[in-house]
Length: 357
Image 1 (spheres, rainbow, N blue to C red):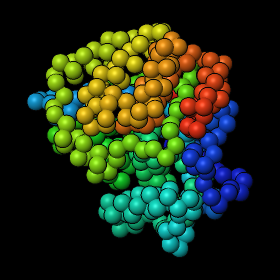
Image 2: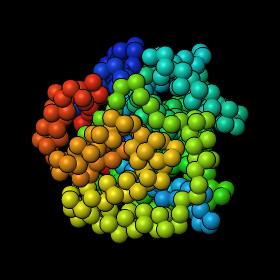
Image 3: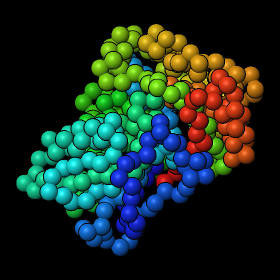
Image 4: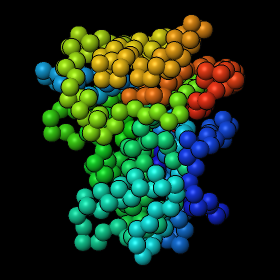
C-alpha cells in the first residue's frame, strides 16, 4: 500500500481509531488510497501518510545450510490501515490512543538515533487517526515504523525516500521484507530472502492481484501472536527448515501461485495459497502450538474448508485468519454469516482487498 502524501483540508479527530475499538464498515475500508499531489505541501499544512497492512503467507527458509534465509510470499491489503499526520512543533509529540502512541514515540526515537545529519528532521507533532492492530499478523510494526520514517523524512525536505532506506533508519527488515517492498508499491510480493550482511531481503517478483477478489479477515479479540523477545526465542529454538521443505515452498510459490495469479485463476490461486501456508504452519507448529496458532481459528479454518472455501490460512504468527473469496458479494455473505454465528460473532471480522499501488 502506498505511503501516500496529500494536503489535509479538514480538521481531524484528536484520538485515533483502533480496529480493536471500532472496525470501519466494509465500504469505507476499501476506499481508494490517497495519491501524492503535484502541488508542493506548505509547511503550514500537515503531511498526511496513509498505509495499509499486509498478509504474510509464510517464509521460504530458516537457518539454511547455504543460500538465502527467510524470504517468502505476502500481499499488501487496503484495510485495516494506518493514517498519520505530521506538523512541525517545538518538541516531539504523539496524539492518539496511548497504546499506539507509545509505539510511535519509540519509532520517532529510533529514527532520530539513526540519522546522522547536521540538520536533523524538525521536531514534530504526530496525530494518529487510524492504526493497524499490533501483533496480530498484519505487519503493523513495519508499516507504522515506515510511516513515521516517511513523515519525518518529508518534514526534513527529503521527499519520497526509498522504503529500504527508511526501514534501515527504524530498524525493520530483520526477517521479512514484504511490508518494506510493498509500502509504496502494493501487490503480491515474492521476497527472495537475505544473505548474511544484507539489511533487507531481495524482491524476486511483484504481481498485480485481481482487483475483484476479496479477503475476509477474522481476528479473535484480546489475542496476539508472537512478537519481540518471545518471537526471537521461537526462531532460535526452531530447527533448520529442511531443504526439501524449502524446495517445495518455492515450487508452490513460483510454479503454481505465480502463474495462477497471473492468469486470474481463482481456484488454483486458492489451492496454492492454502497449501503454501499449511506447509509453513506445520514447520512452525512446535513454536505456535499447531499448524494454526489459535485453537478457535483452527476450528474456523476447518469449517471454511468444509464449506468449499479453499484459500484459507493464517497470516504470519496469527492469530489473524484470512479467507479468499471471488467478489464483494461472496465476501459480504460470509462476513454476515460469521458475524451472526455464536462461536465467531465476538471476533473482529473485516473485509479487505489487495492494494496494487
